[in-house]
Image (cartoon, rainbow over the protein chains, first blue to last red):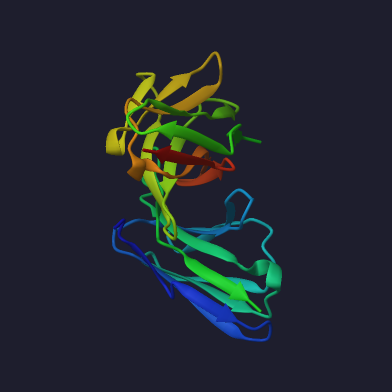
Length: 115
Length: 115
């Protein structure tokens, strides 16, 4: 295992539901990321947090709301999603240390199905 | 904008034979290149990265990659394939975002190793 855990592993929700995805890293890293992986499409970077501050929002719709309370935890709050939001959501973390070429380590993902 | 291309959707190879998974890149400045592997229902696992120096990079599970600046390529190789190497392989290029990194991934190549 990579030291990055994600819960739940599977989630089925209706379009009117509100749910949250959780990511936790046990690697002492400073940066955390959310990606979306859809069939037949490249991985899409959604958000980047560095030292708890959001440094990247890749034009993600507001129905996805990230939260990073500390460098070890990252949440993705979901509300009023659309069926096309069904995908594998991957969390990653990286050391983000000055003077190094960063390597990201990924969690196992949450398989989201929106009905 | 930086990008990588994986020209093959799928590569088929017999166990024991050498394998190559192709990747070409387009960057401004020095390229920082990565290979990741994804097994079914799992997140991405880091295999190796090129920063600078030796054009042949060795990574996990017996994989290596050859950086070729004149051909702007970073092909993944293994001298002798195993059935357990069957998975989805992603090439990525790093764009620096402060100390954290922003990775742009290719579309992935499915490797199928048969007996």
